[in-house]
Image (cartoon, rainbow, N blue to C red; front, side, top):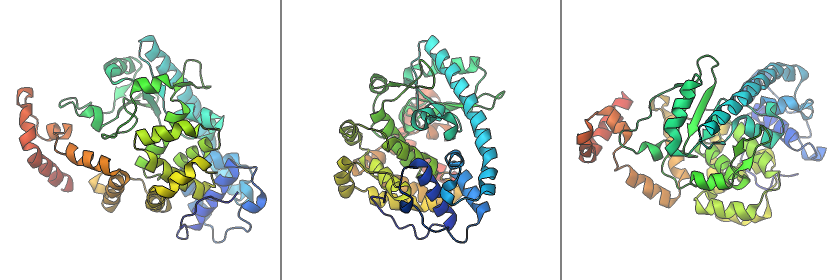
Length: 392
C-alpha cells in the first residue's frame, strides 16, 4: 500500500530508511511485496542501525519480524535479541507492579486509569513484549493525589521530587509527579492531567465514563479509544515524535476499527486537530498507515503537513528533546516548536498565563505565605532573574 501522504525524506540516513522499512513490514505483513523496498539498501552502517533502533525504542517490533523483510542481516537481528529478551522481562515486571499498584489504589477508594506501559502494549500489539516502556503512567483525580502519595510510600516508593504546591498553579502547569521504588528501580508517574501547561482537556470524570477494560488484568482500565487516541497524538506531538515508538502506536491504533465520528468532534472540542493531523501525516508518510476518508478533508485544511515537517528534523537527527537551557540549540528549537504547536487561541492563553506567578517564582524567591500577594508585582523581576540564573 502506497503512503497517502508524502514528506521530503531525502535527508534521512540509509539506516533510518532501513529501520522504517522493517517497521512497515512488521506492522502490515499483508502488504504486497512490490509495495516494499525492491532492492537492498546501500551503504548501511549496521552498528549505526542498531543505535537508531535502540534510540527509537522499536527493537521489539523489528525483532518480532524474523526476516526483517529481507533487509536486515541475521547477525544484526541476533544482536537485537538481547534487547528483546530484556524488554520482555521488564514488561512482565511492570505488568505485575501495575496490577499491584492499581489494586492498592482501588482498595483505598482511588479510581485510576493506566495510560501507556504494558496495558497499552497488550491493547495495541496483543503482546506486552512487543512494546517498550520506561515506567508506569497512572491517571487519578487530582483530589486523590495525597492518598496516592501515601499509598506509594507504603508500597516502598519515594517521590523523585517535591510537589510545588505553594501558589496552586502546579495543578495546570505540571501534570504528573514521579515516584521510584529503590528496591526494584521501577518508576511510577502519577498523573492528574493528560498533558502539562494550560491546554483544555477532558476532566477525569469524562475519561472515567468513557473508560474501557484492559485485557491485561481484571479491574484494570484505560481511556476509551477516542480519548486514548487523542492522548497518544497530543503526547507524541508534545515530545516532537523524537522516538518512533510513539508513532508506531498511532499506526497500530489506526489499523483498528476506530469510530472517527466520535474522535473528530473530540479532537475539535479540545483543540487537538492539528496534533492529530501531524500524527496521521507522519504515520502515513513514514509507516504507510492507511488514512480514513473522514480525515482527509481535515488534513487538507489543517496544519498537519507543516507540523509534520517540523517534527521530521527531530526524527532524522535522533535527538532527545528537552527544554533544559544547558542543551543549547536543541532546547531553543524545541521551545520554538512547542509554541508553534499551539493554536492561536492557545498562544494567547499561554501569553496571558505568563503574567500569573509561578511555583518556580516561589522556589527562586521564597516568601512567607502572608506575603504571597507580592509575587504578582514582582513577577517580571523574578522571571528575569530566573532566566539569568538559567543561562549562567
